[in-house]
Length: 179
Image (cartoon, rainbow, N blue to C red; front, side):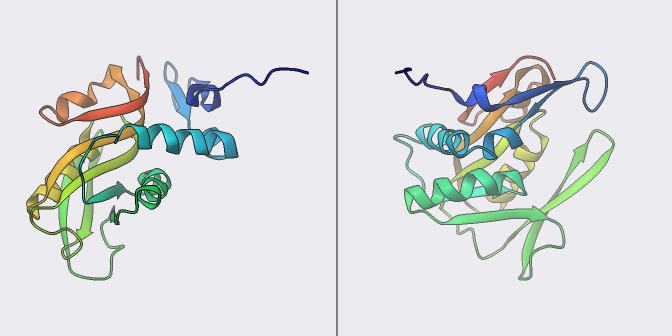
């Protein structure tokens, strides 16, 4: 009988060279979530990053932050708050515009979902330059909440995203050098 080899999340990530342009090593997470074992492992590993963290809610960024944040919130029996692209939320919102490589983007959250004094964890699939995570952090803090941790499945260390989140507790399951 063959012994089952224990896999890591990295075993489920597919690297595609030269996508979307030459020199980029694209880390595809769709292969992680397309496999039941990979998805479970990714959620469990991200949830472990919150061991001993006291928090009131998880905040996930559209759209892949929803994929990972929702099951973590479910496991922890915590609320899950959505940060969406501008124009997607029906109630009164607050918004934050931030810079992209070639332009800007605006995100928003329902004003009444985040209460002053709340301790929140921000969840997303990837930290690259840190721009969207920083914008989400500022949006949450604008409403009077405290960001106690920021967690990501993947981190591209060559893009220095942690620099944008200096002073915050940032953790990722996997780190890759380069872009």
